[in-house]
Length: 116
Image 1 (cartoon, rainbow, N blue to C red):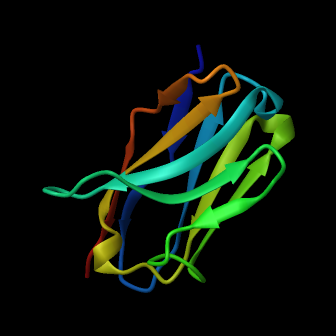
Image 2: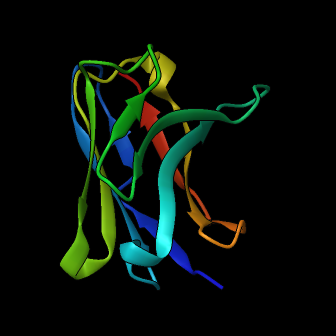
Image 3: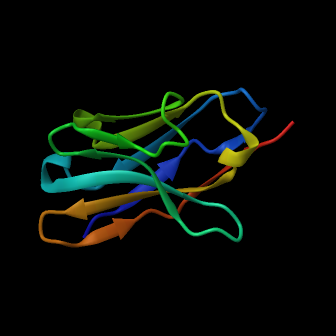
């Protein structure tokens, strides 16, 4: 079992920045991948960025150059730094962790609203 707690969402104007945090109850050494997903109303949940145990990162084309995923192993926390935010980035952002045993766990989500 892995508990994930997201935080850092809020309301920001276009062009602004937010940093999301995902605190895990297990060490990243025990996890294969931690990813950030988002779901806007009426849309499917989509992968935004992910980081694997080795440190390799992946970004969706829509966020490349604007978002950065990183982790703090000592704090068991993954961050998503979001810059140059656009109204299209408005969504609930979820953290997901995949374990070496083939299980996966979701956090409760945090709302990000980009609006003037």
